[in-house]
Amino acid sequence: MANNKAKRVRQARELVDPDLRYGLDEAVGLLKRCATVKFDESVDIAIRLGVNPRQADQMVRGAMSLPHGTGKTVRVVVFADGDAARAAIEAGADFVGGDELVAKIQKEGWVDFDKAIAIRSMMAKVGRLGRILGPRSLMPNPKTGTVVAPDDVAAVVREVKGGRIDYRVEKSGIVHAPVGKASMSAEHISANVLALITALVRAKPSSAKGTYFKGIALSSTMGPGVRLDTTEVLKLTQDFR
Image 1 (cartoon, one colour):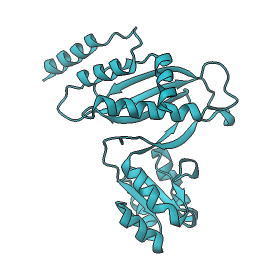
Image 2: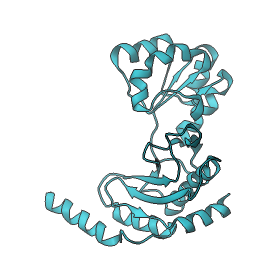
Image 3: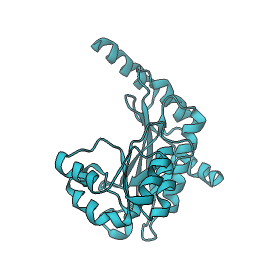
Image 4: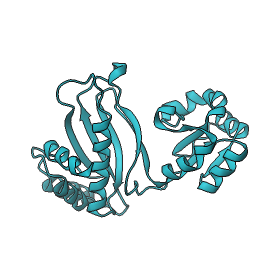
């Protein structure tokens, strides 16, 4: 088993030249060739931005919907009551509740979900869960569109279930995000990449100086990183927009 794993890793690394910057189509093709394990590997992107996240006016953060989704099943919790709770259930939310849901998380530490949405009137109670949800990036936040008006909850649930992702630049200046699954077509993965890059172009802080996109790399769960030709990718986003 160990020998097979070492052989697979070696073969994958032989396909990718770490010193080259690949065009998007070639990079996605290489990534799919390197995804040879039995499960459907996730495809992730790492983007190094020329910003200083310690400066409040250079924090790059937001949410957007990938045109072809992430390929993942997203378990969504909604903190709501009344008509908003019923709308969330009809829209496909996995868990919906008010005080009892807050209590379950608070007392049991239950976090068996991927995204959390809350109507505004619930945030006073949901705010008590910050120590549990915050470190796991599960806390509803108006900046990522997960604190909503009751009339908007159904639409947001459908977006999140359909492939909406949150992005946020880390302290190191890097944005990590999922852009699909290895089983998806190369065209769909490429379109998701361009959609995210386009969103980051639009989110560029006015105070950011110098080169904004300093590096972009794609990787599958078990595969090597494939560096992209940043100039080529940015040209592609002009057509994409």
